[in-house]
Length: 323
Image (tube, rainbow, N blue to C red; front, top):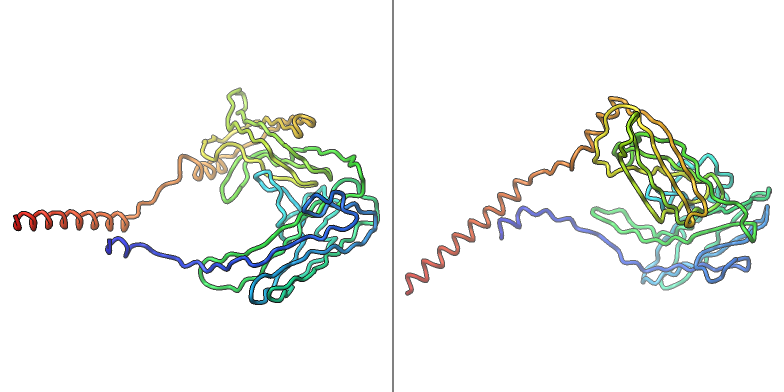
């Protein structure tokens, strides 16, 4: 066991405990006070400050950042409230909620106390139809140190609209079909867009690919319970990343519907996989990832087994002599 333990490398995790909570102060123009997030009825050109309470329950003072981000759609078909300045916004976006709100960095909250932080919203002067969606992130700053760190934070959704009854309905466009690098790997994707200022709920997508001149279905993929943020797009990956595709011409077949079939779309788009692209894709996708053999671990386990066998033999011999 001593020989085996000498082969194990440990990593120390420096993790702080979470000592803070947040609470949104819902204003009078909150559409539904049963919600735990901001869902506000606004007016064109209106400027309003909303407040979030940060309670620090620790024995020492902490510093927090309060940042508003635009809600986008992840490649898994969920909302993303943590966009950065480097993320590209969709070309259909008419009102960027992140640019219309103020941020507060380095907010210091004393030990065992609560601080109210204001976020100012400025609506466009021209009437805005539909929904603007974002998220207010409150994160505790942590000191940089070696090892693994935990950064605690909360996100409160921020939904703005100027109409009581929303008249804008979601729509879907197919922006692109073909090979594209996704999470460091080449995949066949369909880039789907919601160009409207409306939330797309209960999205269901069924898709497959056929090669030119063939009816055989390849990369058959179905996903349900997806969501799309207003004026956003995402890359819908087909297949599991393992199936091999040869160079040539292909056709994407994709059907989608949302809200249990209330809205329906049907797409068909041709694309081409070049020889170079196919080689690049198949290097990464053929079969399962190669498994590396840890010879040090195997040698250590062998040494432990031999030591145990020797110990058993020694016990048997000792017991035989005593008998």
